[in-house]
Amino acid sequence: MRAYAVQCFCEPVVPVERSDHQPEGTEVVVEVMRCGVCHTDLHLQDGYYDLGGGKRLNLVDRGINPPVILGHEVLGRLVSKGPGAALDDGAIGKTFLVYPWLGCGTCDMCRRGNENLCSKPQSIGVFRPGGYAEQCVVPHPKYLVDVTGIEPSLAATYACSGLTAYSALRKAEIDKEHDLLLLMGLGGVGLSGLQIAIGLGFRRIAVADIDPAKRELALSHGSTLVLDPRDPDASTALAAAGGVAAAVDFVGNKATADFAVASLKKGGMCIVVGLFGGDLTISLPPLVQRAITLRGSFVGSLDELKDLIALVKSGNIQPLPVEDVPFDAVNDALARLRAGHVKGRLVLAR
Image 1 (cartoon, rainbow, N blue to C red):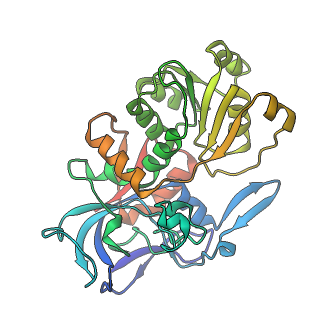
Image 2 (image 1 turned 90 degrees about the vertical axis):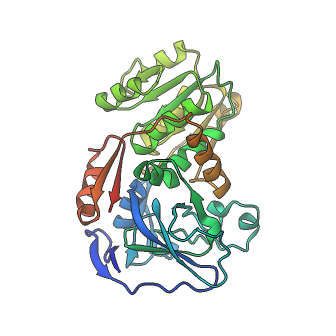
């Protein structure tokens, strides 16, 4: 089979040939039809995360070594299974979304269904070969999610951007009817987050983004208030709206996190999702006196993905813009994403 791999960090991905996999045990193999292009792929291509203050988290130190076949938003046709893979009759040939955030399978977190929080992750497209390929091996059929009725390219995006936004928004325990929710950044995950927030019943949603085109996009997709966080009056506008009860930072750099935390009213919560990079310094007395909460949210669980897909099938979430790109144009897609020239999501399609 053909795949596209990072052979050397900080260089373009290259086509490589791999042998077709014969599934063993509980393994299943899907023929990849769609694979989302995600900002995490850029970090994997670069080989590090920016920790701020000139520090980096090198992926080699996390056990990620080239070659890496990227792609964790995988949708494909089930083509084969191992002898231990229990599947319903007729499953072969059906199309499934793959849950990619796998753990070791044996620790307490994994046994509780929180594989995304496992300390020994085995994520598809990160630690295991991903969907930038003609085939993807999945270790167990329980990770296959039925997305019948959802447009394939859109469905692929729910494995990461949709799931990440959904899991973060579920942590925002506020009065959905009256409290103000702030979303920082309207990239692919942020736009998905806006649609999901509306579907979850949040009625007062502010969006902050430095790009005027994305602010207009937010208004056209249901935001009640848009702001440029660089505007000196932005914080005043949020305070006049009653203050922010919960902020979800889909960017995750110093500027966005500082703005989100400063915007919180007493008792508010800031949930950081993005991995753009940087650091955050908080004075401890105001943390106590304002009774604010700062927490991270990393992708989501298999059960959360199933809940999200059920919500999508119910018709309560509007689709976000998705553009199909040929697999051979993967480097162009990554370059566009890196430059910030994407409205919605890019999905590799065949």
